[in-house]
Image (tube, rainbow, N blue to C red; front, side, top):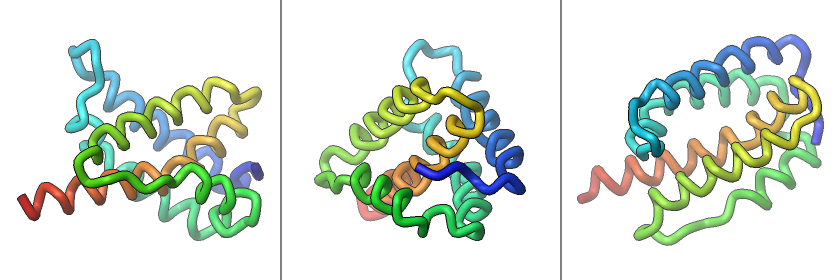
Length: 126
């Protein structure tokens, strides 16, 4: 996996902190899907910033995203988002540097956004 371009690394890190602070602000012991969905605008901003650098088009990064982006059936959309969130957390814990941590977070951004979009689309049709 390649690291993020130096010019955006700090911005992505700050937005990532915003995501985690938003989710951890809850008084609940377990993360709720609604809390994750509330961070969608932050994930969208990270995606736009990172996408413009070509990070997602790098062969190695693209293959990782594709491998992690497993389709789920419509009955399990919320479970898929929650599982992806947990997988991201576990993956982030393996990072040896802040730059690697930020890049691993960025890898999960399009996957989490896809899961959020599917949940939002599903809730509109119900």
